[in-house]
Amino acid sequence: MQEIYEKLGLFYLGKDVDKTTMEATEALTLLKNKNFTTHAAIIGMTGSGKTGLGVGIIEEAAIDNIPSIVIDPKGDMGDLCLTDPNFSSSTFEPWVKDEAKAKEADVGEYAKKISNMWKQGIESFGQTTERVAKFHHVKKTIYTPGSTVGIPINIMSSMEVPPAEIMEESDTFATYLKSTTTSLLSLVGINADPLDSKEYILLAQIITRSWLAGEDLGIENIIGKIIRPSFKKIGVLPLDDFYPQDERFKLATKFNSLLASPSFSLWLQGNNLDIQKLLYDENGKAKVAIFSISHLNDEERMFFVTLLLNKYIAWMRQQSGTSALKTMLYMDEIFGFSPPTKNPPSKEPMLLLLKQARAFGVGVVLSTQNPVDLDYKGLSNIGTWFIGRLQTTQDIQRVIDGLGGKVGSSFDKNEIKRLLANLKKRTFFLKSAYLDDIRLFTTRWVMSYLKGPLKRDEIAALMQTQKETQNIKMKTVDTLSQEHDKLESFQHIDDSIPQYYEPDARQKNIFSSTLGAKVKVHFYQQRRGIDEERELLLSLALNGEEQSLSWEDAVKEDMDFTNFPHIVPKGAKFHPLSEIILEDKGLKNAIRKLKDTLY
Image (tube, rainbow, N blue to C red; front, side):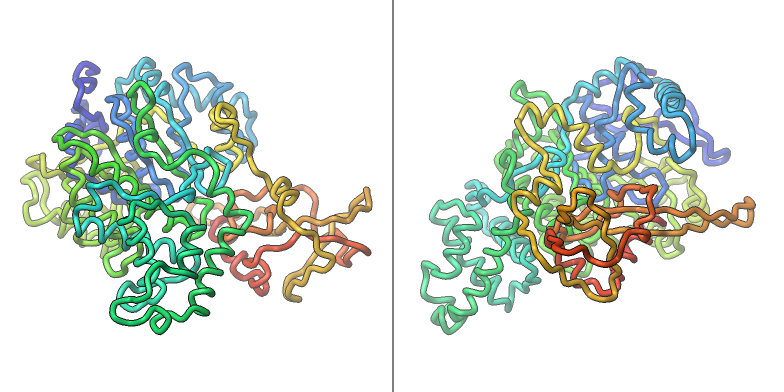
């Protein structure tokens, strides 16, 4: 069996499933890797096994020396770094300790159990430890833009002039310019309409003139050019009539505030966003670059994804044409980045990739829970579909319509409808322009341990060696406070937010902020006789620069913070609180996010 799937050019995805018994057969599910140049979509509800299938596809590419760039909005794809060809229980311990504690099991014994289970699962699909070793030795890096938890990436040092291949083609240049301009404005909270937004028209003019003059741009240059543009007219209107100087100054101030923000300095650390170096090492061997963006707020995610896609397009257009699969771009959860009705900054570069990437040997794989999360123009450019279990009748009907028309002789529409609603986890329909019929298959056991979303400290531990090599120091709440925070003698918080003060035995009474939560979770399922309550005490450290809250990073506490004094000590000094706390009356938004996380 190994001789079949290890042939260069084949991706081993799993085993075909008998639709009558719904059990896996011995027939392997294999796809030519060059078929992915017409792109692929993975659709399925939460728990259907989308992440495992995506991880498996990237593993196959890496083994064939095909590099991947992975955009990871949820934090799951960092699991690609969790491999061990020796299946040592000590290696598995850091990955399973939380799960072991939750099950009140000994960590060492639990790690041994999981490592044996993973080894047996991999071998049950005919895969050897040598195959695991081959993937293990592919360099995998977790980049965390705007953070030094993983490897930081310097995306804001300059907005370089696009290559000639972009500049010389009007439509491509227009798309590149539009997405760059709108994403920059979104970063300072401006949702600009290219047709009538003064901010957009001014900034687009500034960027266009600079690039045509061969001038790279940075935020500092942009601020200066907003205040004193090199041109005196916008169209036929005098500049000061179209956009008066005092209004331009307000726009410049927004970018200046962004530049002056302590957290923004983290966007300026690390290596430049060089696609070639992200994909290949100095010996031409493939790498896997994972961009974990779960810690960013919506505007920052949109800005980063747009800039990354633009950089990727610029690199792609400099490559020679090929029919072979040269590299892959994988995005886990496309929701919000290329919707059918709205036009966020990331949409146009994504559609451009789907339309043009095939000619350059670039395969795009998109994962989503819902078939309507992707614009129909993008859907029409996708040649391979992996469809897992769907929850709603509407979703099932949309997929049937997509699979229908030319349904293979093995399946009729009613049969597909029934199967889609009842598919087991890790079981998918496969429809491809390169296959005569629809296939039903179960994904192979992946070589990476699927732990789930990685926490900040886990990413930091995995990337520690690489950070030491690059002499990168992790910025913590304390170091950020020491470097940037100015202590305040009075901290005004809305009366709706209760405050407690942890006693300081040193009597220095310098307070950093922590968000505390005292929660009760009720588990109930009548069928299984489950009726249980658990209480939790959680604390989430704050650094004063948060753009969003991530309760996944909260720590379980033993001490009840509500027992702390609630009267402020004399002479107390405070590190500043972030605006998202100060403006959140009754902490309603924080509570809503906590409920979502707990659920």
